Image (cartoon, rainbow, N blue to C red; front, side, top):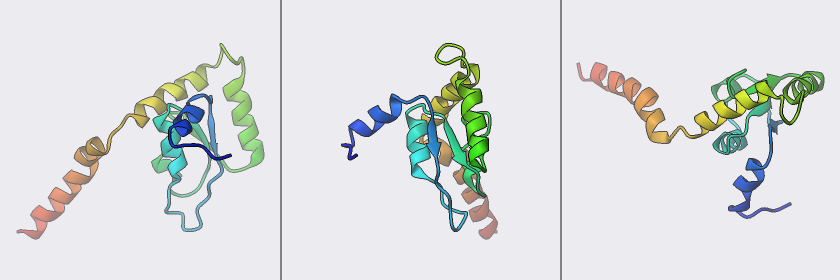
Length: 125
C-alpha cells in the first residue's frame, strides 16, 4: 500500500497503538517510524534492543518486548476493556503525544547545547 505524504499521519492517527518490529544490526540506529508514531500521539510496542530506550520510555510512551509471547501479553493488557476501559493505553497515548510535540530546538537547548558549550569552554582554557 502506497500512501501520499499527507495520508501517512492520518493513517497513523487513526490507530490506537503502533507496533515496531525494527531490529538493529549495529544496535545504534533508531527507527524513524517510531518518531512518526509519537508525532501522531500513537504509543508504541517495540522490539527491545540496545538503544531503543532512547525513544521508547517503558510505561511512559510505550512498551518493549523480546518475544512474540511478550508482545501478545502487552497487547492483551493494553486492550483489556477496549474501547472505554483502557487506562494504561490512554496514559501511554497522552505521553506519546506530549513527547511527539517535542521540537528539535527544545532538545538542542536542553541536551546538546550544554554539552557542546562545556566542551568548547574546556578547550579554550
